[in-house]
Image (cartoon, rainbow over all chains, first blue to last red; front, top):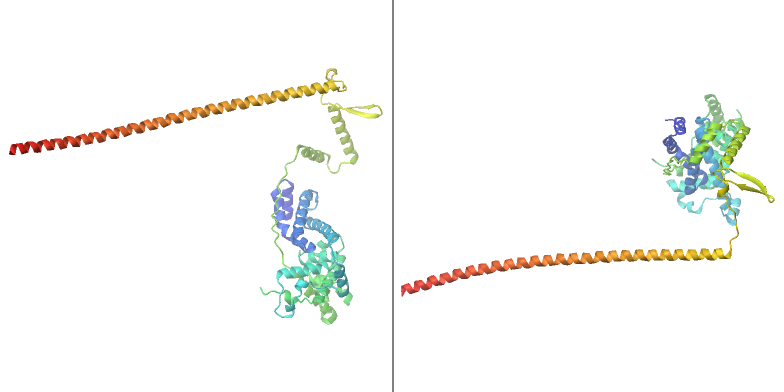
Length: 200
Length: 231
């Protein structure tokens, strides 16, 4: 059953149809929020809030074919609130700020392993998540949003533009500059593509 | 195609949102421009690194259930459906005022101006002269009388409680005594039955003994008779 069909069933009183929508989109929305916020527990809360808001507001959605972009809009708004909240409460030492300014981005100490230069070296999944979360924090929020939606959520540029209420050219431009910014971070940390590749 | 123009297509090319004509043109440029070729390779590298971030299964187990609506919510929904989203704000205001007036008349609300302020009175049925009462000041004697009544009431309650407790205790003791009596009788019966059984067993033993002795005496008599005959 398509999203549109499930929405129509829900609107005539079938709450099970809404639950099916939730189970279909839960993982995607959660992973998007997790990459944006970097906090697993906070992401669970934000994900719940997103679906609760969708539950309450779905009858006001006129074009049911836009459900996906509408749902992501709700998630983006909640993520922005969370990021603002995190920024308010985050304590950063003056020494760290100075370091970051002088030397550019620095790879976290726990990940700065000497064995990284070995050709057989591979990061494990936990380390990969940590590295990428930290790298994402170093690029502007708007670029991060576009990169995550494109790389991980598989959204088209036109869909991302609609979600973020911006032009397609702006979206592509932010993608381009975001990828370049991340490349610089990886270069500074001496992060190589080969260390991320697994033999399946 | 210049390098600036080529860069406008980089993202479409990287994420396969480019049309065939655009792809051919861009690839032709990349083949001839090392700088753009290197930049495209670097962007692809970055994208590959990002792809290594695996998805997590949150296992939120979210389930939505239907909330039971209160009567007020149902009425509100019905009114909203009736008015509709396209109704003019003036119409809604008029309906709202009409509802308020109806409610006021049902509640027999009386609004008057007294001593420099508004006074509100209301009741659910029409007021009659006999139901009205006059307020009067409470005196010290009234308070003392009230206190006396309270004390009398408390004493009555305490007495009633004590009487109830006594009755319950008597009932309990009576039951207990009857139970003891019943057990005593039962014990005697058991005892009596045991004595009877014992007596019966004893009689049986004696009978057996008598029979044995009779047999023995007969044997002795027979032997002595035989001895006499031999002599």
